[in-house]
Image (cartoon, rainbow, N blue to C red; front, side, top):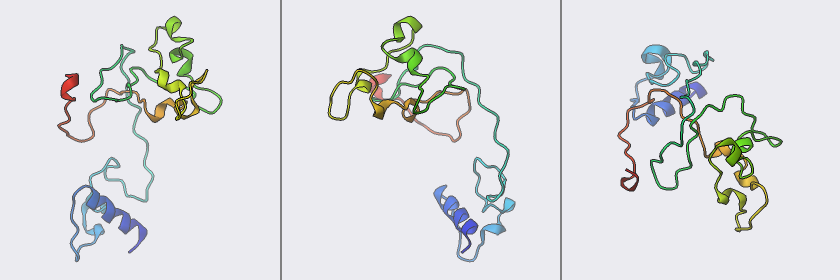
Length: 155
């Protein structure tokens, strides 16, 4: 089985599709195994143009959590924010040192602790890359229908 055919079969099975033994992915319209994906009808071996950037709502207050221990969501755009080993733009507003002056939410004290619970004077290296847990919310339609509901205790 060719690599591209294998990828189509895996993608088809991942979305709950079926492929019968006597069928080949190329028999489906679009040549991509009949799989409806974010790529649209673009062939798997073709690079397509990127979608336009999503619109972010104007900066607002904190976004309510949907489940317990959910990392807070970012209520503003972060486009052009530098996040590297040498700089973290988030800390210019959200660090304990700057939060009061900027009016931003302070980062949790847990971000200043090591795994062993030792309190540091600066953000722990394991908590330095904010976007591993905290994500901005774009004004976009859902990619798939879902029936997700907030945890009862947070309603």
